[in-house]
Length: 197
Image (tube, rainbow, N blue to C red; front, top):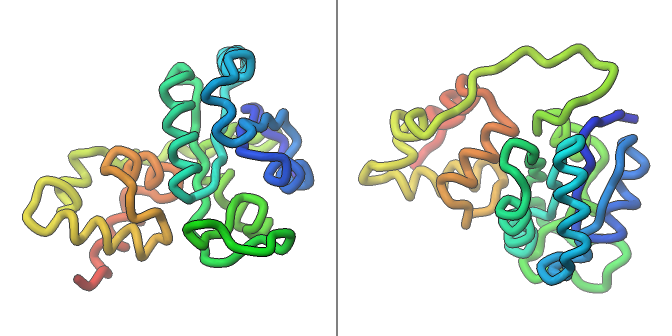
């Protein structure tokens, strides 16, 4: 079980149940979109973020990104980290039907996927050696790799997002944030070089 400094923010009860078996930290539910109008929950999340930081761990569908973006605007940027799971087609066992977009949520992905996502998010794992600082991917790197500001950038970005099992609707900024959680600059260069478009 990973012991994490940051509190984890999830969408719902089943996400919380799933993570409680894998991580030792405070886990807070947004109760889906209810967090938008729940001033007390927003205040609690801000206080916890100030004290120990938060790790936002929402589903990889559009609703998850709406919640993630709302929290990004609610909490001090320096106190928030983002954990991304890949878009994996399927449905949770407890549900009769899959999600609107057909992707597994946090509760539906494997333990290994969750642990890997947490490790790559930059979460502070207590008791483990500090991770070596790795070179962050910048907007300038995205430009150099042809992912922004070029004639075929949008096509290349979509191909990259599909290859990485990330949501196709990510903006360049959101993609940059997700990539920095998951890949080093060298890894990204290798992936982009292998893409066929």
